[in-house]
Length: 184
Image 1 (cartoon, helix red, strand yellow):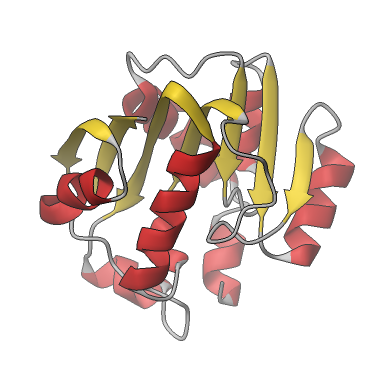
Image 2 (cartoon, helix red, strand yellow):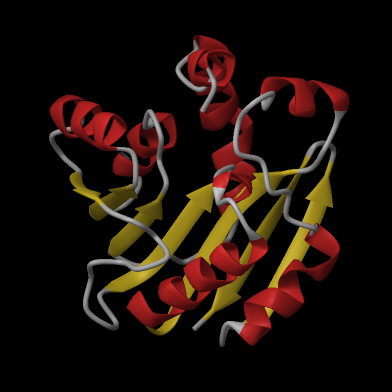
């Protein structure tokens, strides 16, 4: 993340957005079960909210400094440093998995597809994968200047989830974002 993006993802405004709008919208009606994996929590504002809503939460973060900071700050969550395209977990480890506004930080569509396949692998049969990502705008592009940004097309995302082995995939688009849900 560039400095502006990193600052915003730690801001009080983003915390209020996560608590009041993003997570309630992205997870409305989703049954994640008792043992949930969060992929790419970054600074962990989504992690803070999730930790109050699920019995067991594991966060997988690729950035060593972010993982270390989250581990120190969030004692109730198991934080693992690792790559979501090659997860360090056994098959069928989790009842649910989530990712919020991070898929566009995976550098290629092929790597995003590997991530989806890995999520399916680590979910238990019937487990839910839910989350959200952003759609483009001028402000979004400016916030990602000199930052990794591989936008996800919400129009084709359900098909990508299906190719990764998920079923019952659904995608809903709203202003500036989309949410998704699928089952293993």
